[in-house]
Image (cartoon, rainbow, N blue to C red):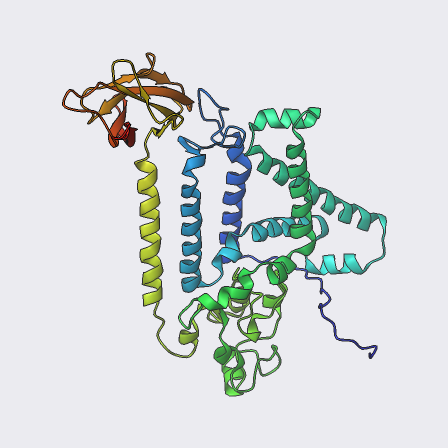
Length: 474
């Protein structure tokens, strides 16, 4: 084999994003601040609960309850999670079909943490040229302090990120104290330090490689794009003209001079490339690495403003618009996604708002199926399971419906108080007296009715179950 073997993995070229000001940078910063305020502060928000930690958002795995403010989600409500995931997936398709990878550019966790880490790097090491010089320079005391300080802050952010995630699964103040005193559960330490390591590596070291090589979204996004999708695009006709782009030079300093010589508006400053966090040149057309952060738009607009030329050389636009055609945002695909999205949100909202405050199951005890008493009456035994979904007590009554002459015996538990989120198992015996017109035989059905006595608007729960009788030949 030749010494010049084929490289299966392209060696990474270090990217040094340059800072930029503009409307999209402000939008990204606003999304970043909002996301961090929610993520880091939410576990510390208190919410009064009589039977659980006073934490607004808490995923209590040992107790098998998820608390989200006033909403309590139990294991049997896991279909809500499936519904939420479906809604997020449809929303992603809907937004991507309209405006490309805006999720990646503004809201993706990888983007948010990478953006923060780059800000720290810029604060500690300086602007892009200074960071390049620092990396090329030999190790000195200054370089050690700047690099070490950068990594130390990254590590602190990564640790607080991992610890905050763990706080969502336990009472935050208690967990922090237990972590410091070394008495927290082992999974808490493992989760915290695992996320610390992954956050440090992904946001600090890997950065754009996560978006380029690890994230599947970059690969299948093209399936959701069409000629009307709004994407970050370079206007080649305006920027290149007939003779391509050219730097500002004598005889090429005004638009009139440049147009007279067939040169476009792009002055080939490279600012759009320098601000790109994934290191691409948007002037080469749409590329799968592009995360639609639109910082190149801010960079180009800044240059156009300095030259007092019109903005929009790089802008959000569609392929149809670049080719002189009309952009159609309202199309069958968009309407279809929108209808499905509204239906899914409505269905999930309805399910949450109309959820029963408690549930009940009734199962027949089949060993034995029935007992025949000395007076000839037949007795069946049932197991009733009650579950209070609320964080407040509920008084319920249990009765029979549709069974003439049936007697319910629950040892005085026909009426009881379910404590907050209490699960209870009861034994119920149903006895039917002998029929003077003839013997019982076969299978009949009775209905248990579980009703709240708290004046709740929830409908009574009815469970129809079989009542076994002796066979006619017995």
